[in-house]
Length: 472
RNA sequence: GGCGCCGUAGCCAAGUGGUAAGGCAGAGGUCUGCAAAACCUCCAUGCACCGGUUCGAAUCCGGUCGGCGCCUCCA
Figure 1: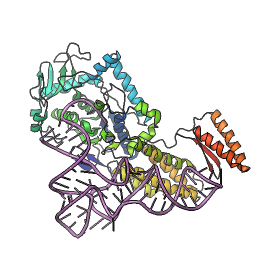
Figure 2: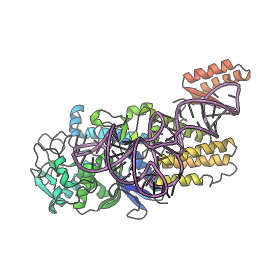
Figure 3: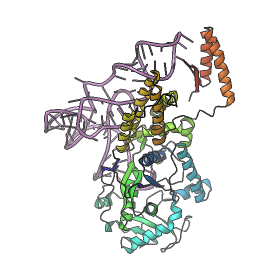
Figure 4: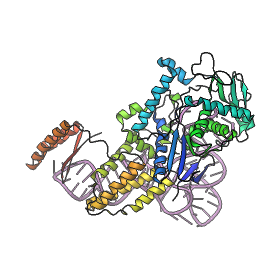
């Protein structure tokens, strides 16, 4: 049983073997922190959080590095357009670093609600300008970059492997590239390693080529190798970053003599009504307002109910279906005894455990893994009804492990924070209702149940007496 | 124009050669005072369409139609 991952670089499924036995280095491209975190930001972190948990469970020590881009790169192509951070700063009347800081925390707050564990290292681009300059110098020394008008560009024509990741033919890239209005580039395919700062540009650093700021792609080449080594295991990112971002990262790093990432993993986009969520189309769902009406754990669950390399649709109907499904899993879990009692057969769910593992090992097939959990829920409910409490208790432990620890879904929703007052009042009403039922005054009993329901409290009668919960 | 992906039940969504997972919704049933929950049964002779390869194809090949992505910032 071994983990197999789809490697974008080779376009094949490959058995995963870390460079150093027992250790795994992962680098994931994080967001540019210049605006509110949205749904699109959630998929990668959730998927990689699960990958990390799965690897750690196999006994690997994982160093998980995910950066934050806090240098504003250009809204347009490399030689024109505005700095996104600076633009936002102007709009909000803030220092660019205040903008970065504000959205940095907004992003991590949202990730925390999604149950995404903090990366082991969160490097920021602005903290690694020295290293970015060093890489640029190394490329100049090797003759694979050139200075022009205070900026430094990577010379794509000098690097034959360019295009290896995205499968593009460099010679055909020229035609597709837009005509540069005013550019210091020798070739439109070339990309900036260092940009000269115009006088009004706020974020700027001194360099051998004058004041400027680093190009977008350099930061990732530098920060990944700084913390994970010149060669490391896994590099992840959204599929929309394959070209040009990752292509350029790879070219730069290898051109500088670093073997770089061995496995490239790319998650697919999210859609809304079949269309990619896109900022430019005003077609995004911000996380903060979404979490007001949907449990973040439902969002996480829904994300994991589709394979990370497939498109995932977030139409409300689909999200509600996930909510109902998770409610069922949680309800089942809550109904199982937490103590084994008369010995719980530890091998009770060994087949389910094996199926779950096989699904996870198959390029992180979380939808299939979740399907196994639904099967377990049904079988364990049956065991519970048959009085096989040890078996049901074992299922509870299994859920703690697989749904909770591996998939990172809180199995028991936060119910412990009901106020004593609410507990007391509902309890009192239920006593009245029980009394009514005893004297067979069902009209009164039903009235109480209906009115509680209208207030958001559902009541269910069980052999052990009434059970209530808040409706969501 | 170049490169690439996708089209599986009302909806979401696995499955990449061996005879269609799972979830939601829906129908019937058991249980219940009635419900709810739970459980049982049913719900795609067919995986956009047309050809081909094969003993066998949702899965491979060719074509057609439809949707989408990247090639510019994007997760």
